[in-house]
Length: 304
Image 1 (cartoon, rainbow, N blue to C red):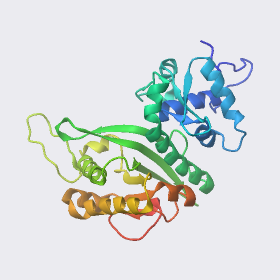
Image 2 (cartoon, one colour):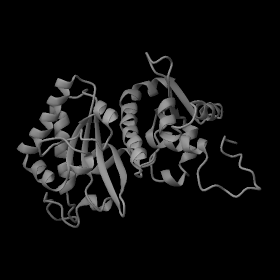
Image 3 (spheres, rainbow, N blue to C red):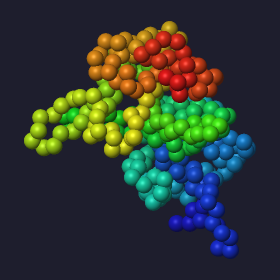
Image 4 (cartoon, one colour):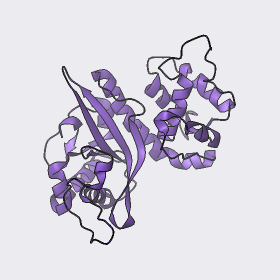
């Protein structure tokens, strides 16, 4: 199949920058789904909207992407990869090892849109802030639905893992975070219990076969060291309720930190914070909008 990014002239040296259609496929493979506007803000924020919509429509004609129309949105489109598109991106270097999740129909897509698009919305707040500050955080520095094993055959699935590089006058600081996006669709107690799962991941050290399992504070050999040099901070982004409801949910997260011994131990070693999504978008990710779960006041997520 000839696709929209197979048209590079043989007389020209290849560009180190991937062509836009390639980036669109990679972004949809990474994020599962995104609206036209989200893809525009993610990849080409300083261009006309047609810069994104034209290649998207070409990719759709090629059978690589499709869309579902969002309800009550003036016919806004949420785009996703077809099975053929998901097959194609398996060979993209940036997505190797990323399991494909093709969406087989517009009906299936519509079931995934509320949460998936809110996660992309959260990512865009960090992308916009990084551009403004001159930090490094691009469309592939945010990986949704990352799974890690826990003891007893269980696992934890983070809504996203974020990689972010702060650029200072004479240094680069690499930061990582597990991001949980809460739309107030689960009980506040279930949301707070996510902290227990992260504390278990932090403390879980697999034992060789035949030895008794244990749960101890992280030491060399903790399972998370397979993926991270430092345990990522844990960030909760809340939306979908009144300010009163969201503040109560943040209070319940703080209560879990103070009352659960393993979560309290985690909080002494790992930054934990929560924020309202609308504040994140209005004041920027590095604004003083984050509530530290083990302390009082508000600060930037980089200073939790």
